[in-house]
Image (cartoon, rainbow, N blue to C red):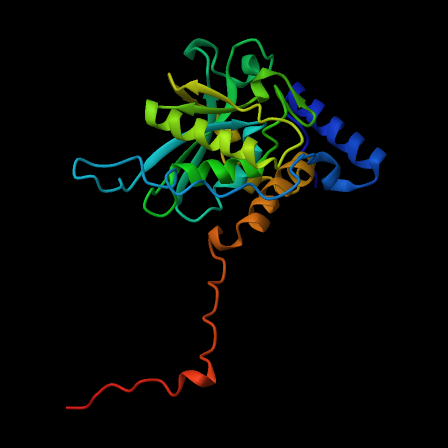
Length: 259
Protein backbone atom coordinates (compact mmCIF):
# COMPACT_ATOMS: atom_id res chain seq x y z
CA UNK A 1 0.00 0.00 0.00
CA UNK A 2 1.35 3.44 -0.89
CA UNK A 3 1.67 5.99 1.86
CA UNK A 4 -0.40 9.00 0.88
CA UNK A 5 0.91 12.54 1.38
CA UNK A 6 -0.15 14.20 4.60
CA UNK A 7 0.55 17.86 3.74
CA UNK A 8 0.04 20.18 0.78
CA UNK A 9 3.80 20.32 0.24
CA UNK A 10 3.99 16.54 0.24
CA UNK A 11 1.21 16.36 -2.36
CA UNK A 12 3.16 18.75 -4.59
CA UNK A 13 6.24 16.55 -4.25
CA UNK A 14 4.20 13.39 -4.91
CA UNK A 15 2.53 14.74 -8.05
CA UNK A 16 5.64 16.50 -9.36
CA UNK A 17 7.81 13.43 -8.97
CA UNK A 18 5.35 11.09 -10.62
CA UNK A 19 4.64 13.52 -13.45
CA UNK A 20 8.34 13.91 -14.21
CA UNK A 21 9.08 10.21 -13.92
CA UNK A 22 6.29 9.03 -16.19
CA UNK A 23 6.43 11.82 -18.77
CA UNK A 24 10.19 11.40 -19.17
CA UNK A 25 9.91 7.64 -19.02
CA UNK A 26 13.05 7.20 -17.00
CA UNK A 27 11.86 6.50 -13.46
CA UNK A 28 13.99 7.54 -10.49
CA UNK A 29 16.89 8.83 -12.56
CA UNK A 30 14.70 11.55 -14.04
CA UNK A 31 14.34 13.17 -10.63
CA UNK A 32 18.03 13.15 -9.71
CA UNK A 33 19.46 15.74 -12.06
CA UNK A 34 22.96 16.22 -10.71
CA UNK A 35 25.16 18.13 -13.12
CA UNK A 36 28.35 16.42 -11.92
CA UNK A 37 30.59 15.27 -14.76
CA UNK A 38 32.88 13.28 -12.48
CA UNK A 39 33.27 12.26 -8.86
CA UNK A 40 33.86 15.07 -6.40
CA UNK A 41 37.50 15.38 -5.40
CA UNK A 42 38.66 14.11 -2.05
CA UNK A 43 39.37 17.03 0.26
CA UNK A 44 42.96 18.23 0.20
CA UNK A 45 45.12 16.61 2.86
CA UNK A 46 45.22 19.77 4.95
CA UNK A 47 41.42 19.91 4.99
CA UNK A 48 41.13 16.29 6.11
CA UNK A 49 42.81 17.02 9.41
CA UNK A 50 40.45 16.83 12.38
CA UNK A 51 39.28 20.27 13.51
CA UNK A 52 37.12 19.16 16.45
CA UNK A 53 39.77 18.58 19.12
CA UNK A 54 39.97 18.21 22.88
CA UNK A 55 42.31 20.18 25.15
CA UNK A 56 45.18 17.79 24.34
CA UNK A 57 44.74 18.16 20.59
CA UNK A 58 43.13 14.72 20.09
CA UNK A 59 39.97 14.35 17.95
CA UNK A 60 36.77 14.49 19.95
CA UNK A 61 34.71 11.27 19.93
CA UNK A 62 31.69 13.20 18.66
CA UNK A 63 31.11 16.34 16.62
CA UNK A 64 28.17 17.82 14.74
CA UNK A 65 27.74 19.24 11.28
CA UNK A 66 24.51 20.92 10.14
CA UNK A 67 23.80 20.93 6.41
CA UNK A 68 20.85 21.47 4.07
CA UNK A 69 20.40 20.00 0.62
CA UNK A 70 16.74 19.96 -0.30
CA UNK A 71 14.22 17.76 1.46
CA UNK A 72 15.62 16.64 4.79
CA UNK A 73 14.18 13.16 4.29
CA UNK A 74 16.67 12.66 1.45
CA UNK A 75 19.74 14.10 3.15
CA UNK A 76 19.08 12.18 6.35
CA UNK A 77 18.80 8.87 4.47
CA UNK A 78 21.93 9.52 2.41
CA UNK A 79 24.18 10.43 5.35
CA UNK A 80 23.06 8.08 8.11
CA UNK A 81 24.43 5.06 6.20
CA UNK A 82 28.02 6.37 6.36
CA UNK A 83 30.63 4.74 8.60
CA UNK A 84 31.56 7.07 11.44
CA UNK A 85 28.12 8.70 11.57
CA UNK A 86 26.47 8.15 14.95
CA UNK A 87 23.14 9.81 14.29
CA UNK A 88 21.28 12.07 11.85
CA UNK A 89 18.19 14.08 12.77
CA UNK A 90 16.01 16.31 10.63
CA UNK A 91 15.21 19.89 11.57
CA UNK A 92 15.32 23.53 10.60
CA UNK A 93 18.15 26.07 10.55
CA UNK A 94 18.50 29.68 9.49
CA UNK A 95 15.38 31.20 11.03
CA UNK A 96 13.69 31.94 14.34
CA UNK A 97 12.35 29.49 16.91
CA UNK A 98 8.82 30.88 16.64
CA UNK A 99 8.48 29.77 13.00
CA UNK A 100 10.50 26.54 13.15
CA UNK A 101 7.67 24.19 12.21
CA UNK A 102 6.88 22.32 9.02
CA UNK A 103 3.75 24.25 8.14
CA UNK A 104 5.43 27.65 8.19
CA UNK A 105 8.82 26.56 6.84
CA UNK A 106 7.12 24.92 3.85
CA UNK A 107 5.70 28.28 2.83
CA UNK A 108 9.25 29.48 2.16
CA UNK A 109 9.03 32.77 4.04
CA UNK A 110 10.70 31.96 7.39
CA UNK A 111 14.39 32.02 6.29
CA UNK A 112 14.76 28.43 7.50
CA UNK A 113 16.16 25.61 5.43
CA UNK A 114 15.13 22.00 5.86
CA UNK A 115 18.38 20.78 7.42
CA UNK A 116 19.92 17.80 9.16
CA UNK A 117 22.28 17.61 12.11
CA UNK A 118 24.86 14.87 11.65
CA UNK A 119 26.67 13.59 14.73
CA UNK A 120 29.88 11.85 13.65
CA UNK A 121 33.21 10.54 14.90
CA UNK A 122 36.02 12.86 13.67
CA UNK A 123 38.58 10.11 14.19
CA UNK A 124 36.76 7.99 11.59
CA UNK A 125 35.59 10.60 9.09
CA UNK A 126 36.70 14.21 9.06
CA UNK A 127 34.51 17.29 8.80
CA UNK A 128 35.74 17.92 5.24
CA UNK A 129 35.05 14.31 4.25
CA UNK A 130 31.52 14.64 5.63
CA UNK A 131 31.09 17.66 3.36
CA UNK A 132 32.33 15.63 0.38
CA UNK A 133 29.68 12.98 1.04
CA UNK A 134 27.00 15.63 1.57
CA UNK A 135 27.82 17.41 -1.69
CA UNK A 136 27.75 14.08 -3.52
CA UNK A 137 24.28 13.26 -2.20
CA UNK A 138 22.58 16.27 -3.80
CA UNK A 139 23.18 18.83 -6.54
CA UNK A 140 24.97 21.76 -4.88
CA UNK A 141 24.74 23.90 -8.03
CA UNK A 142 20.96 24.34 -7.80
CA UNK A 143 19.97 27.65 -6.24
CA UNK A 144 17.06 27.59 -3.80
CA UNK A 145 15.78 24.24 -5.01
CA UNK A 146 16.45 20.53 -5.42
CA UNK A 147 14.58 19.10 -8.38
CA UNK A 148 10.83 19.56 -7.87
CA UNK A 149 11.31 21.01 -4.38
CA UNK A 150 11.51 24.74 -5.05
CA UNK A 151 12.07 27.61 -2.62
CA UNK A 152 14.71 28.93 -0.23
CA UNK A 153 13.69 26.31 2.34
CA UNK A 154 15.25 23.74 -0.04
CA UNK A 155 18.52 25.59 -0.56
CA UNK A 156 21.93 23.96 -0.38
CA UNK A 157 23.69 25.26 2.72
CA UNK A 158 26.41 24.50 5.24
CA UNK A 159 25.78 25.98 8.67
CA UNK A 160 29.14 26.56 10.36
CA UNK A 161 29.50 26.62 14.15
CA UNK A 162 32.87 28.39 14.27
CA UNK A 163 35.43 30.11 12.00
CA UNK A 164 37.40 26.91 11.48
CA UNK A 165 34.37 25.09 10.08
CA UNK A 166 33.71 28.08 7.84
CA UNK A 167 37.31 28.06 6.60
CA UNK A 168 37.31 24.35 5.78
CA UNK A 169 33.90 24.49 4.11
CA UNK A 170 34.87 27.45 1.93
CA UNK A 171 38.18 25.81 1.00
CA UNK A 172 36.44 22.61 -0.06
CA UNK A 173 33.85 24.49 -2.12
CA UNK A 174 36.72 26.31 -3.83
CA UNK A 175 38.43 22.96 -4.46
CA UNK A 176 35.26 21.51 -6.04
CA UNK A 177 34.81 24.57 -8.25
CA UNK A 178 38.44 24.43 -9.35
CA UNK A 179 38.12 20.75 -10.22
CA UNK A 180 35.41 21.56 -12.75
CA UNK A 181 33.24 18.57 -11.91
CA UNK A 182 30.03 20.59 -12.33
CA UNK A 183 28.77 22.56 -15.32
CA UNK A 184 27.89 25.42 -12.98
CA UNK A 185 29.55 26.84 -9.87
CA UNK A 186 28.54 25.50 -6.48
CA UNK A 187 25.59 27.46 -5.07
CA UNK A 188 25.90 26.11 -1.52
CA UNK A 189 25.73 28.96 0.96
CA UNK A 190 27.82 29.21 4.12
CA UNK A 191 25.70 30.47 6.99
CA UNK A 192 26.42 30.85 10.72
CA UNK A 193 24.67 28.27 12.84
CA UNK A 194 22.63 30.31 15.29
CA UNK A 195 20.39 27.40 16.25
CA UNK A 196 19.11 24.05 15.02
CA UNK A 197 15.46 23.25 15.67
CA UNK A 198 14.39 19.61 15.71
CA UNK A 199 11.66 18.79 13.20
CA UNK A 200 8.42 17.09 14.11
CA UNK A 201 8.62 13.43 15.16
CA UNK A 202 6.98 12.11 11.99
CA UNK A 203 9.86 13.50 9.89
CA UNK A 204 12.56 11.56 11.76
CA UNK A 205 13.84 8.46 9.90
CA UNK A 206 11.07 9.07 7.38
CA UNK A 207 12.77 7.24 4.52
CA UNK A 208 13.50 4.20 6.67
CA UNK A 209 9.93 4.03 7.95
CA UNK A 210 8.27 4.70 4.58
CA UNK A 211 10.33 2.88 1.92
CA UNK A 212 7.35 2.42 -0.39
CA UNK A 213 6.29 6.08 -0.39
CA UNK A 214 6.61 7.39 -3.98
CA UNK A 215 8.74 10.41 -3.08
CA UNK A 216 11.13 8.18 -1.13
CA UNK A 217 11.35 5.67 -3.99
CA UNK A 218 11.88 8.22 -6.75
CA UNK A 219 13.92 10.91 -4.99
CA UNK A 220 15.36 9.84 -1.64
CA UNK A 221 16.50 6.32 -2.48
CA UNK A 222 18.44 7.35 -5.63
CA UNK A 223 20.35 9.93 -3.59
CA UNK A 224 21.26 7.33 -0.98
CA UNK A 225 22.33 5.01 -3.79
CA UNK A 226 24.58 7.74 -5.22
CA UNK A 227 26.44 7.83 -1.92
CA UNK A 228 26.75 4.05 -1.77
CA UNK A 229 28.12 3.99 -5.32
CA UNK A 230 30.57 6.84 -4.76
CA UNK A 231 31.83 5.64 -1.36
CA UNK A 232 31.42 1.85 -1.14
CA UNK A 233 34.18 1.63 1.46
CA UNK A 234 32.39 4.13 3.72
CA UNK A 235 29.03 2.38 3.94
CA UNK A 236 28.00 0.67 7.16
CA UNK A 237 27.93 -3.10 6.84
CA UNK A 238 29.90 -3.12 3.60
CA UNK A 239 32.24 -6.04 3.10
CA UNK A 240 35.86 -4.99 3.76
CA UNK A 241 38.22 -5.20 0.80
CA UNK A 242 39.96 -8.56 0.78
CA UNK A 243 43.71 -8.64 1.06
CA UNK A 244 45.61 -9.30 -2.15
CA UNK A 245 47.06 -12.83 -2.37
CA UNK A 246 50.76 -13.15 -1.66
CA UNK A 247 53.00 -13.22 -4.71
CA UNK A 248 54.77 -16.50 -5.42
CA UNK A 249 58.02 -14.54 -5.59
CA UNK A 250 57.66 -13.47 -2.01
CA UNK A 251 58.29 -16.99 -0.75
CA UNK A 252 56.47 -18.90 1.98
CA UNK A 253 55.03 -17.01 4.93
CA UNK A 254 57.34 -16.49 7.83
CA UNK A 255 56.94 -18.86 10.75
CA UNK A 256 57.06 -17.89 14.39
CA UNK A 257 60.21 -19.10 16.20
CA UNK A 258 59.65 -21.83 18.77
CA UNK A 259 61.07 -21.76 22.24
